Image (cartoon, rainbow, N blue to C red; front, side, top):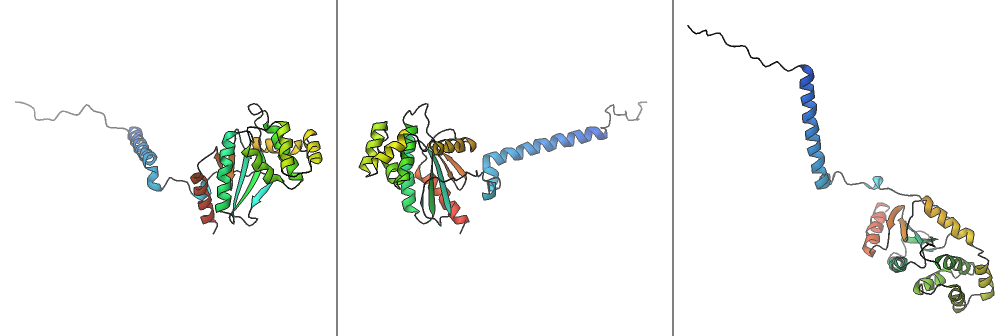
Length: 229
């Protein structure tokens, strides 16, 4: 007669530690799937940055020239180079913005001449400071950008004459590099806040690199105005 006794299973029962390892492994797989979904869907809107999470850089103001509303809610700080073609393009964008947001934006200009590739940029910065001494900074500033292919010393002096500046005072100021300390201070500030090229802007501390489309600036400005009203 055949025995009806059941054979004992040779498989060993799982230990408590093995069960724990399996649970951990399954949990990790699920977590990776969730993260993957989050990356491709931006977390269904849950992983996008809030205003509080936006990286903002505090840029020291100093006594640099500014234009716009003194009651503005939006501060735009530029680090720029007069011989840089991209800066010229960006300057026009800033003019348009100042016109459109005349009551909401104040614009501060800081020098960051890239002397290795723009040999005339440093003197151009000095000359603008000399024009500032005679309360003609912005007029001279705009003229430099409009003629940034001619920034040699003789042209810088000629532009001062065309602006009806005191040319003797201006020429002495430029030749002695009277405001070298101001330009150098801007350069050091640029390095301090991580500027490596021009133009670089900070809109209420939000960094914008390059001659971006006007829409890029407007989007940030509108969002800043909305949160401050």
